[in-house]
Length: 443
Image (cartoon, rainbow, N blue to C red; front, side, top):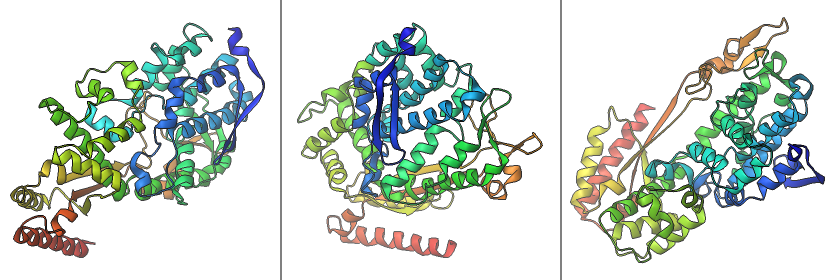
């Protein structure tokens, strides 16, 4: 237990463009940052393929994790300190969970998870509790300390206020990634008054989360609208999604070739456990964005024309074009395009892709939450708690409304380059043009 009380001889700081400085005074936090599992996050992009649309978005999960830690530190050591009256162990459970919450993200996160059916939260808990440097550090604080930190990630920790500080509809994770992603993409959508929100945050009287003083409602409105705009304008940007579709299809093609016994120019050693669907924790941790990018650079010279082309496209930003797609009215269009591409000897499995995204900017009852109900509650002047959307017309207008966006991606360059039969090319162009005219009339 003495380790829990150990402070650094002097406060260490990381210069940060969002929070100005990230302060570390606890030995355990400093030691966790130095582990190989945490340093790996430097090699995992926070926004995956988004840098192909917003060129400044080169920041990493390492940046973000430090940011979430710093916001959590401000809350538990600042305004909440007297009201929560947590002991030092509880404070450090919160700080460690905040720091380590994204530890299990794989390379290019979501596309990778789609192909190989991995789950970053599962791997985060596995790294915290497995045979890792991170667990070794956490165990110095007590034999059960790693399990306590993992329980926060799993949302099963007994102190739900601590859980909600890191994972809820208004938490340290979301506040950091909105501000950080806005900064690095160069957009203004994600900016909101975080300092004001932290000033009006309070622990919930029932010990089951956090509440907001009613006087801070407008700052929370701004936060929710900022989140909505970031999803629509940045996270779901159709060009970024085109790059993610390519990434998804590269991995899918590699999986298909491996299952058929294809001999790659260079055996993708680090990927074999994933291709074989038998991955140990140690093998998972060896993989990051740089490993995938290396194999993509090698695979662009493969004999397999599809894998070679997809990798070349991704590396050189020759992305697929897209149109809006509605499965209820455009199914016939998809079938026609599919048939035409097959006639042109272009495999629609890899070159005609439907991609769907959706977001719920504010949910009255957040699915999957342990408590079942996690709306944002306002503390009214008379001491009553009112759910946010009952007081805010702005939030009421978007509460519970899921925005779904579906695109159909196709290889315009193949169609226009003269590579395929001219009659087929003209028919494809005609179909897409007719669809665009119909779209124009619809809106």
